[in-house]
Image 1: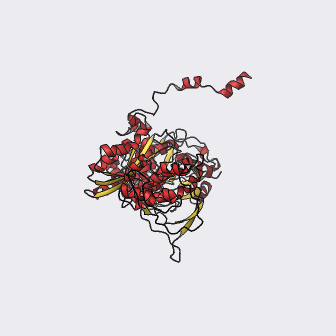
Image 2 (image 1 turned 60 degrees about the vertical axis):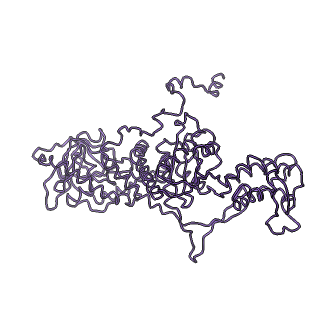
Length: 633
């Protein structure tokens, strides 16, 4: 059976070399230690009373490490086991003979080394921390298991150093790592090799890097595990992945983003800035659990701040989440001594009221894109009424005129002078002199060139039902009152594009815990800020590269100028910090973790309004219509 395994190292040395080289490179410390025992260069192994990480009761009943005196050309030290799992490789031809116990004279005492264990362990830990950067960037290859066994058999040790019997190669797969053992028929382990480094407590480097890669690239465990299953690839267990995510990956990503935020805010102290703000729910519909509110610098297009709110913080009310997240963003920006000169948001009613009452000193502008979108919706809805269908053909022209009026106006009065002219233009009257509104008496003419005899769409009849309906939309008092928020001609289009980046890391079709969802939003912001301002791609002739794109809504083909590919250079320091965090952790991976102070699960465990009943009770109460129907038959 062919099985793909993930290897960090290939065989780069012949197995017969000096003991100090073998033990420091081929057999890492964590593969042999049970109680923080360490490795010295003048010894092949340090004795321990516990089996190596990953061994089972059936495969290793008793574990002893034999220290042999250093020689000019010494053989690898012997690891003795009273019972070896011969089923690991049925083709090895191992013999199940009575246990061969070595005499006490064959072992050298190592009591003098006990006092040096802690010092050596600290030294190795510091060396591992220094090499975290090289480990995080090391190349990874795929190797077929049978090919690896074939290579091991060609480079294998011929005889056991203890009993001089022949040895065979056995293998053990743990997570994404494979370990090879050269074992004789008497159970003596003459040599062991591991395909990966270990980073404390027997945790393999490959498992850490797989978990980090899944999270940092915006993937989820289920899909990548299915990919590994399809390939036959040895893979990290699901429980191990989520433990690594909770203990190391999420905290490192959070710290990395917080440091980036501190640097950005510190450079903007006492400086007038224009902030773009927008909220995003984690799921479609009105049943969202999380709301992400993002603040962007309008000038530099950098994401300055992200606040994530759980509905448990708003008494399970989803509509209140965006307001709470907005308030937290404004408070953080003001506490950082930023001078918010203008704030651009959509026309969210709760935020608009908050700006009028609590933050009246800050100029509040509405996003042009959202305003034009809502205007188009109103026109298309009016076009569905009898006698008004012709309005649908004018939607695009009226929306374009709205953009033009906002761009060339500095006040509501000036806006209405330009805006009211659309009521004359649609009836083929391009000069006017009075009174489309009680408060405004625009006098002027259209700014376009001569339109010719034929014109599309067709002109409206004056005072027709369609014309009257358009008049109601154009001169709607609520719409006119909002125009003062549009004359700044601001748009949050870049924030809308950033929301597409969030979808890459936090899909609306997946559910996440609060820390994981927040960290995935931080990753999207790190991605955006790191690749902000990428230059446009050019071909060999130095010309810009374009891509054709068809818009299904407008039914038109357009071109998009392509940018250079992203480099994702920020992944290297994040992976390095993940490894350093693991190396600094002296606890085991499976130990129970505590919730952070800001985790909404401290409020209540789930979003359910009451505690769940017993599972057995739910099973007994569960009824199926199809099952009842079949029983009645």
